Figure (cartoon, rainbow, N blue to C red):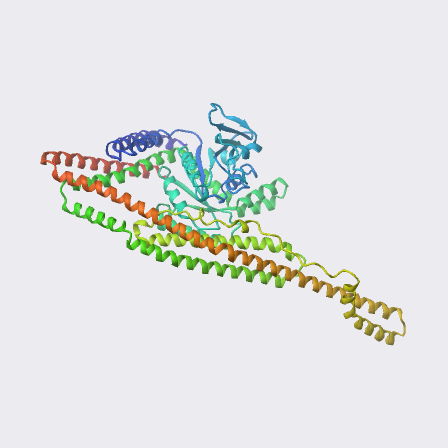
Length: 618
């Protein structure tokens, strides 16, 4: 922090703390009794965090997005954090600077951390790859220290569990870790666009964090990552416009770790080429410039961000309260109309229920058709490979190619379901477009397709004397003709005989190789047909069951939303009718108080916005 920044921090820090205290007092006076204590406490706690120390950047995202691999690449240490299982991390891990590598686990019921070796990190912080259960259930979090230049700049990277799908419970762990973070690194990969659960979690996670960096990981693995990136930008602009201008960093952690290995082996040119293609350098520079070197500004901005977020809903509620106290006849009409509309929506024959049923059927038909086309494309690619193959490595290469192809089909199907459910919710009504229905929990790859069987091979019947005769006889005539022709020309016997038998061997070997190729292609074709049958048997019922279950869950979520909205409107209408019955003296007093409170809130909002502009974080 230079001298000018130090003066700005000294002046603004007490102002921010004072404003946050005023907002917390307003929340206690005007907020919902159900959560005002917790909200006010959170604002006060955030105001007290504007102190010196390393900046915390929390790395979040869905499972299998490459979060742990990204941190390993950022600190230049392959294998530091566990990455080899579906949900590698079960607790959050804080990776900071230390002159020598070290790690410690904070355990439940233990006052002091327990030192552990770096090789023990998976045993304390990972899930069992087979059972999916935590290896240890007494670990609160793990702290790791390594001598990394990035971390020396004053940064702590916090790795978290996946936040959606089958591990939605881990979202609570991540949200708890957010209370100690200054910036958010939101990780997706190039395989799939942002999901509804990711957008929902992003909104929750940034209630107190204003600095967000988006990372599109694993660019080396997905060729279509640029299209996914553009789609993600569009989704943010549509559903979370606050982040439309946030920076994106396409990276390949694998390329950076390979650069580390090349550098250690002495191949500087290869290391430089890989590091440049990885994109990690740009992300590291941004973390240093935007987070590590501006921790004090970020913390003050986060406090203002959290406080300002509470002002708007309080002001909106108070403004409606003023209208009620002034006897605005339009207010009661608006509330009654909204209540009646919600009552209609709760009916068993409501239009949105019919829309849901119709669009569900349409979605299932669309998904089945898209799946069948994907399977047809997969079969066509396999048949093309079989036709072009020389046969030697066909059966060894084909299972890997088909496994990748099936994964691609499955990702396309999941994307189709996500997009379809999002559109379905929007079709029901604009107010329900943000209702969250997580797809990956329902649409899981069938067990029979997780590990593909090895292709079978047709028995080789080309051995033995009869098979030898079958191969040799077609070439006998050509060999005999060669012997006779050369004998007549040369007048000798040895050369013609050698040439004749050589030709016979050549033709016999060619026939054998052709038979082997035919047999390999036949076995490969049988294998492809078998997998296509498995796909057509296993997946369509999965589609039907998943769409039906997701439709039911969407209907339940919409019903809950309607009921909650109706309850709030009933309470507001009752309060308005009570205001209309109140004595004029009481109304005048309450109007003065409500107007004063509203003016106070607007003043607080203006002050918060002015301070955030002066900080210049955004």
